[in-house]
Length: 592
Image (cartoon, rainbow, N blue to C red; front, side):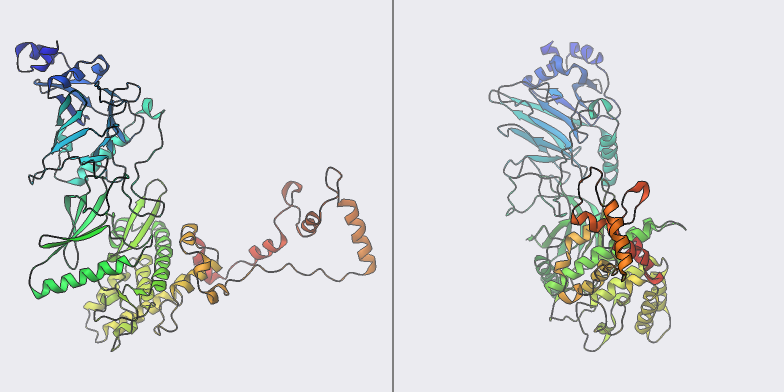
């Protein structure tokens, strides 16, 4: 039996292979024995349920959603303990749980995770470029498996080496990464009720609580240049192309900006601009500001690695532009408004001005679990540190009035004007097209007409009041707008945690009104005081007959009875709620 299964080219093996079923249509790959020792794994009775025949010429262990796993993100587990592993592998150096094939929860790529005690696995995969990307224990405990490129894995033990060829399902070998993500997502979400009853909520997360990228293991040397594999082209910036790539050691998706360098003057200007952008971003660390993971020269190119995002705000508005009566965009706008205000308040404290804030430079991600958007400000090529000023003035339609002066004036309120224009593009579906029509028209003073239009439209939105003033000295800054949200009680808790009230200027905190004091009791005559004293003596005892405390007596005197005889909210709170807000302030009610 052992000889026949190992020598698969001979006649007896063909007969045995014909008795094995074909792999299911949704299988991921087959582990086909490559050596005599690995054939013993195939012949083990613990793996009988997973044996399959591949095109009537090879027998292997099928990796599919039908494998027993403890987590939806785990595709297969391999080891010597049948209680911990779905695929049984024996050997002196094989751990109870030796390795796992998992799905990265964010990038949706397959990864081989080393769980052994000695770190003895190896992967051989040759990319289309001819590059070899192999498992490196000095970089981490896992490596990405590229379908079609990963051709074999070996599990090293003390006495032998167990080698397996990987026969991938052709459906996972795609030129388009989006198709691969769709298939892997379907694989992850496939119903497996008999396994999900033992679900353990241990996420393979690559971001911390602040949204910053972290690596999925503790042995990654940050001083090393990251390895990467390009997936597909996602855009083009002012100084070069942007590619989506994956770190094969951690599975993290990254956006890589490639800046071509040569000996020309234009190349020198590009390099200076990119160096300036990286320098500015190195000064900033905020949840809603883009972070640079790594930047270095590689050959004749300058490579900048950043976290990958789902798209920019202009793309989100195109996809999610609501139908009549749908308020999704309004809710997105409230989230965007508060998050960017928090970022601008932080930038003001650091003395940095972006100068080119617009929908194309605002990236977003969507948290499916919490159903929340997170926005970050990107493209910092024109940013300056005050009081520094540069000749570039930013995008025409989002330019503030003081930027049009000669010489231009740059302040922290320059970005406030651009944020106001951006919010108008969110609230008014046709506003961006109207501004483009003004630019394309024959008007002699296009900039003045655009700024006048922004000023007029902003007056209809109370949350934008004071952000579109022509005089930048009268224009509100981010801290003042945040204090206004605090004053009306509509600042979202997530944003309040980033920008606590104590970080705002002292004068701004003074503008937040306190709750009104309870009204003074009216003057009473001696007879009234006697009646009041008698009433209190008759009702002032608790249900158990004890004398109430001073606090209870005071609360009873100002708290009217509610439903069921229970005391209602304090009178001062009732007075505050009944007072309400002016009609012009109703827009704030949906911001939370």
